[in-house]
Structures are given as structure tokens and as C-alpha cells.
Length: 276
Image 1 (cartoon, one colour):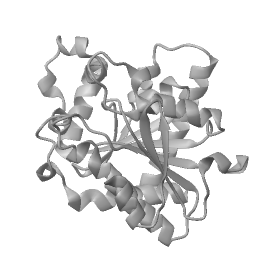
Image 2 (spheres, one colour):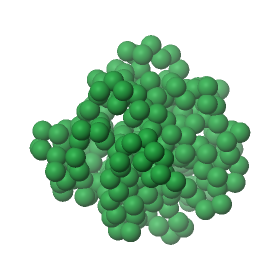
Image 3 (tube, one colour):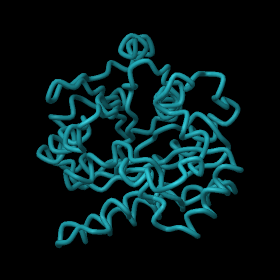
Image 4 (cartoon, helix red, strand yellow):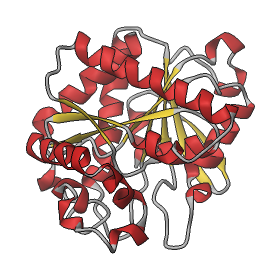
């Protein structure tokens, strides 16, 4: 269905299969296959959203909303003749019980992109961007890397900081007043980081949930572990997790929980990010 929609919109996506996972590459019309891009094109902004969903979950917020927001942004960028972007719709973001980060589609994808010269691109992950009025700039990468050592990690931390600063610069440019920096459930950024590529996740939450969770994290900094470690969840009250996130990956992730009146806010952010 995704490919049919992109074809209908005259995008002609490039579909690349890695480790059994199909990833859709969408770029400005004048660009050719990414394998043929010259080196100067590698330092580009790359926007990522996974299109897979957990079995038996409608996947409205996780992650159909972000996919359609990126498509809407691509239409506007094409209309404005902006070419400094690449969109990737990834497969296998959702993990099965017993699987780890290296099983994510983004892990093998990141390794492949790194090998063909895209190590220094600017990667932004859009996940669960369909419910709420507050833009969340994730700080989960800080938690994922906090126990890691080595020069590579130091460099990756620096690059993540640059990505985050650019996101903050963009929201200031757009005069967006509902923005929070808090840890979020890990997304494709986990696979990218494990492969040595810096990535910044963007999501959305209702303002009340965002404010309450921000206050909680200030009081209990280690609560971020609840979002990524199932064994830690046993010792915490998971009711403190924002309601929007608790409905992800389940049968209640339906369209009636979406807030389409705020989709344009995400699209504006994406377009401004690409335009610098």
C-alpha cells in the first residue's frame, strides 16, 4: 500500500532489501539511486520513520501518523524545489520477544548507509507523532550511551548534541512554544546508535502528559530505564508512563486517539529542518 501511494504521488521510491527487511527510500525527483550519489551529497538530512507495526495493533500512532506526515512534508519540499533531503521508511523497528537492538532493521540499514558514505548525514527519527500538541525532542540517546566508552562514543555524543541543537534552533525559528526535552521509548535511533551513527528522535505528546512526565524525570532521573528495560519495570509503577505511550503496540492504537489538528505542526518542523 505504501509503495502504491508513493507511486501515485509520482515519487518513484527506491526499495532496498537488507537482511530480509524492505526499506523505502524517497528523495527529490532529480536525484538518482542513492548508490550513485556523489560524495558531496552524502552530508544530507535524512528523515526516518518505520512503517511496520506490532501484530494485532492498528498502528495508527505507531507509526502510521509519522509516515503520512513525512509524505506530506515531501510533497511540500518538492513543491518548493528543496532537494537537500532523503526520507527512509524503515522495516522491522518493532522487536519480537527475545530480540535485541542488532535485530532491528535500522541496525543493518545504518551499517549499509555507513559503508556507502552516509556516516556524516544528519539523521532524524520520527516516531509516534500522531497524538498530542507538544513536540518532544528525545534525550534517550544520552541514556543509551551513558555507560559506553571509547573515542567513537565521544564523537557520537557530540554529533547527537549537534542534531539536538539544530532541532532546538528550528523550533525557535518557528516560534513553537510547546516543546520538551525528555527521554522516550527507544525507536530506530537505537539501531543507528548501535551501528555507530548519531540519530535524534522526535515524537509528540499531549501537553499535560509531557509536563507530568518531565517533572517525574527531574525527580527520578533513572525512570528512563523503565522505558527500555523490561526487568526494571517490575520495580516501578508503570502507571507513571504517559498514557499515549502505554497505548502503543496494542489494540487501542487506533485512529480515534490521533490529533490530526496538530499534524501540520510536525510537517512545518520537518520542512524547516530541511531548509536549514
